[in-house]
Image 1 (tube, rainbow, N blue to C red):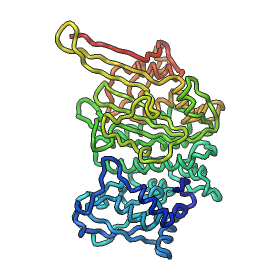
Image 2 (image 1 turned 60 degrees about the horizontal axis):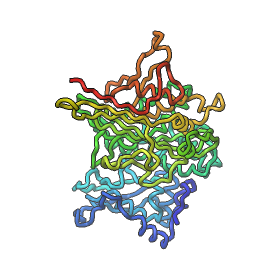
Image 3 (image 1 turned 180 degrees about the vertical axis):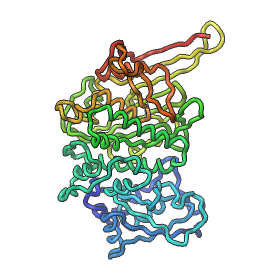
Image 4 (image 1 turned 120 degrees about the horizontal axis):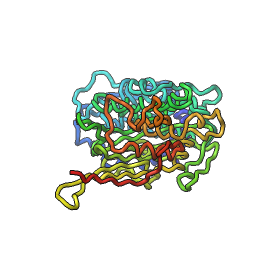
Length: 493
């Protein structure tokens, strides 16, 4: 059985005996559906590139020395041009006898996914004279490596700090030092939380690297970042607390197409993750069990719960059509290929309300149907609201804690601001009508999207979103009421 604790004690804690490693190989070396590791017949095996692997951190260096059975701090491997990075990972696994779930390989200036080519393209034909140098990074050191990477430096606000002396083996101390968490408490699920968050940060950096030349993805990520920062400024959190929260919002999959006239489309694709998927990692000292509010109309608010994560998903196939779902993990899920990223390859595999913990926040859909009395079609808009007051309170308490103490984090963030943050995390940055607008105060008098020069949403009745959101969050204005289902037909010529 493989170890499940984090690599706080070093990579050597996960080194397997020869017999156990053989059993691990037989069980683990299977490719996900839709991928295929190329055989020798697919490429010219004579075109091989020498590779050396150096340790990035002390744990990695110690693992390399143990594999060399001496003072050597370098591993030797071979890469056949045209094959995937996975083939190098398997070689290093065989040398270390440490499963790859506990470490990563990366170039000094570029990240590589397991199915990427080490040389940049799968059919690169040029062999370099010098060996390609890779870094072996223990999972515990991964946040520190990513904080130095060009595709994360401008996303993260805070840099990891070393754990306090004497607590280097404490999972909570490691997590708090790495991500500067807000008043966390002891819980057995911190290793799970840390592993899940490290994987999510890697996936974000890899996505930003792959999409760095895109004309649409980087602007949309900027939209998410700016929206999150703007919403956080509405709260009573300090600047440092805002930075902690913002660093915990990690887009995982994003594909955007802008046709230049009708705004942003998030389009189905069979070659890359589609739509916008975000993981949110926060932890405060006051928590409640997410399972309670998922199962019962009234949430059982509890203190000192486990670390939680929140998934948010939006699909926007065309103007006036949008669906937003969310899923709270309380505690954080066990790391797995399914939980690390959203690899959504067709409409049939999009998350569905009520399946695998996904819950509908709201949905707006417009379609054209035949007219009853004459030729032609008419637009029919359907709006469905899923978020309840108990749901909104549950999300707030899971992310920020309860507001029982006046100086608590939960008291500094209203339920409404928590839900606006959830929407901003997927680029859905709204400015809601405020109290005083009816009396002519200098505030906007309508629910609207925040002004943005880049990609924008195009939807129908934003007052329906604003009124429902204020109502379920306990901050209704005059005239607001909860409208869960609406059908509007435009039968005009």
